[in-house]
Length: 206
Image: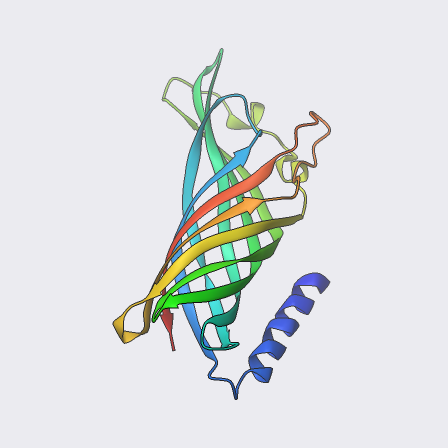
């Protein structure tokens, strides 16, 4: 919580310091298509989930802008497995508060490529099990009771993407976040696992 408070304070100070520099701020909502590399040997599938939050954009010059964001990002992946009790789908849900520190370069008016680092803090980890209908027992017998302890509380990545500002201050954005930190906190295996997320978002600049 102390780290999150410090980030929010930095975010607010950036906002205040940029008031006289044509600062823009807004909100965005989008779709995450996420996976976790080296996480499971089962039939893995990307997980589709929610991304929501706000952003600032402070022009540096005619071409460059600094655009930090504060987002809630639900990530993870899906996998399918089969045991004696039946066939199952396991949904790994990892929810983060993330702070992307994005630099934008405008190729033409409205169209920008963007890149930068991001840090994230895990606020929730959950395992959701779904059966094909053949299982009639208790899911707790096959679920991991200490599931949230399997993952590190901290994450970091590199973001790459592009955005375009439409009329009426609408923004469309596509971005890929490549995890660079091992988030494996489990003693069961030594795999280095990392988040990978494709983000498709729509925003509005006030």
